[in-house]
Length: 415
Image 1 (cartoon, rainbow, N blue to C red):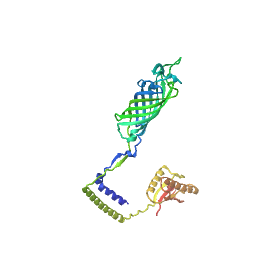
Image 2: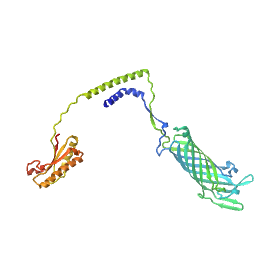
Image 3: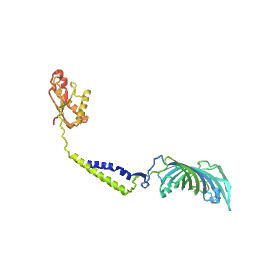
Image 4: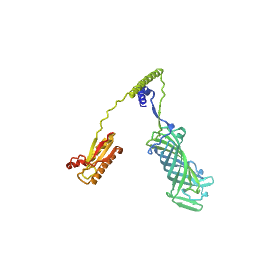
């Protein structure tokens, strides 16, 4: 198989110029594969909106439309998690104007004034108050859903739904009911309303990071500020504003390779066919050379005569542990053993000039066991090490040289 791989590599080298010309691979984003999530710090935005709202409770139609127009403002901070889905939270505040019919009074009158308004034979009390509090919305990009995401699009229509909680604030008021007149001071935080609503947020890109906003919204507001008990009001508003987008503002799709189609002329086709034929001929020649090389007789290397003795490791009198100097010797022996494919015989010795026979016998066994265990710890296979002891003297050169008899000899075992 190796010769086939080599032939293929050489063939690729011969054909490389033509292949590079024909296969100019490009890598492009493919939205059909979906879109990738961005980092958490991307796709954040902050927006400020201001505009006008109109309160539409039960009796407000008796007051002119223009007299009910009041200001509204919103500051929001939010994030898009995908080209379709996002959230925003913020603070919402607006003034509301209207009237109510004292004849239908059945609850606390909040925000009413002594000013009256005539409509036909009926008399209504005017009311004006301010509400503000937190607001949260879930955003859904209709344009990206219907038309598909496109970076740098000028216009986006975004549908949203959410809720808010508003605290009501009103200056001192006076209310007359029949012959009874009531005065009071409805201070900040004395009452609050819950509201659910939605709207259509229209965005127009002024730059990569700045959008112009046209926000059309409506809310169903819990009524705790006029004489209609727990009925609900509708509040409609139109707001204009600006939004600033932080960090990365777009979305990336997975990158896929695209191989362009290449149409050869007849001359180019003939030239490629000739190059391929020449490459096949060279491959055949290389295959034959490989066969000849594999079939060539290999010279037999002469086997070196084994060395009988590898080394000796010496011990102090009556000691079976390795000294620091002999540890270095044992490390060198281990390095040799791990490189050579040989079997070895380890023989334990003790001098017969000192100590009893029982002590010397135990020393021989302990010394050879110490050397073997150390060599195995250094990575030498235990299977190539054979251990034995010898009751004689290693040098047999007298008591003056007894230190040379306290050793473990390491011998190469002849095959």
